[in-house]
Image (cartoon, rainbow, N blue to C red):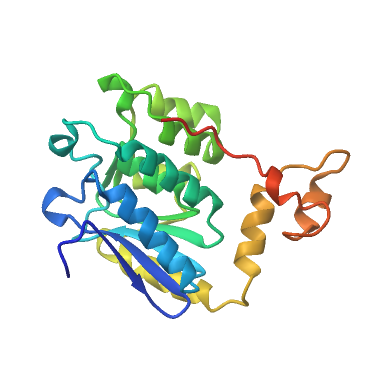
Amino acid sequence: MTDAPVLSVLHDGWGELVLNRPDRRNALAPQSAADLREGLAALLASGARVILLRGEGGTFCSGLDVDLFRGGGDWAADWTGFHRDLYACPAVIICALERYAINAGAALALASDLMVASEDAVLTVGEAAIGMHAPMNLAWLRLRAPESVAAQLALGAGRMRGSDLHRLGLAWALVPDSGVLDHAREAAGRMAAWPAGTLAGIKAALRRPLPEGGDVFDAVQARPGEAGAAPSRVARPHIGG
């Protein structure tokens, strides 16, 4: 294991994007966003159809490493860019949520298509309590959750345990603490073996807006690149700086 803040590991048809600062509970460094973008692009270029997003050492992500961000910097453009990359990503993103995902870490967890959470994991969207707007968390919550659930997290600076995330539909699977990574890896490998193009096609259909004059059946039957698919008109969440 190297000391790079982000690692990318390619397997057969799937890959792992690893937050690799376990001594800081995988808090994000200023370089992390650029490295995440590079790692994601490398895995996609190598043919990964499923990507597991996880933290090294049994913790997902404790947010920004505030000691490293006090001097400012231009990291925000890459942070926003990475979330746009995730939104446009044709591969299925699985998050292995171990222990906790706080603020910026919560945004990464919520950006995943499927979340495997431990029973005692905690996801916190706490930016309101420190005077921040939380644009990434808000963007993904608007896509993933009804307003009532989003309000509990974003307005109340709320904490949700894995069991609540699963009950509310934000987590796909709920497993014992020791089994999160094994469960997520098994799922990624299994799904990567499915017929090529199936997952990307379904994911694109789920994101596709209703065509003008059409209905939901028109939207989900059109394949990317076909008439009516309108790939350039896919609605994006409003992701600001």
